[in-house]
Image (cartoon, rainbow, N blue to C red; front, side, top):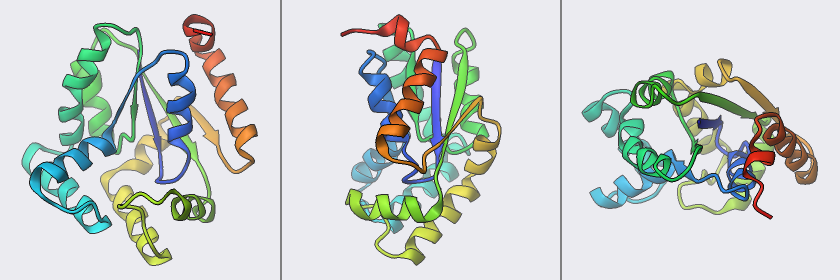
Amino acid sequence: MIICVVGMPGSGKGQIVRIFGKYGIPHVSMGDIVREEADRRGVPRTPEGMNSVSIQLRQELGDNAVAKLAIPKVRELLKTHEAVIIEGVRSLDEIQAFKDAFPEEKVIIIAVHSSPQKRFERLSKRGRSDDPKSWSEFEARDWKELKFGLGNVIALADYLIVNESHLTQYRRKIERLAERLGIKKKYFTF
């Protein structure tokens, strides 16, 4: 099974990765792939640098460029795991790339939604070098993500979790989804 976790920056995708990870499900981060590519190209990990690398990759390899770079990592993980999480898919082209590369696997999409204000607050506290430093940078990043097609992926998600409440409540929602997907029971390792 391939579990694609999608959402706008700061929505809470990482919490799903962490909770599913405690059940033994590994993950591949699309953002990490872009950051690795930026490092390889000598591009700074700034909002502008990450945007530039994302665009360059898509110009060089097509709209599903980051998925193409992720597929070997996912393939390797599927050799030893029944499920893999892919965090940060940005377009339906990327979803299709995973479906085409792994026709024998069920591909599900989990979308996380949070309001812009909540996401900005979280990103301001997170402190990653490519996080926006101002509201205008935040809005520009949102528009970039939407131009890649992220809104379309969210719209076609199999599951939607709203993350506007306290972290404990959000984690409960994730745990319930893990149960619903059979992950909590099947992969429970404690």
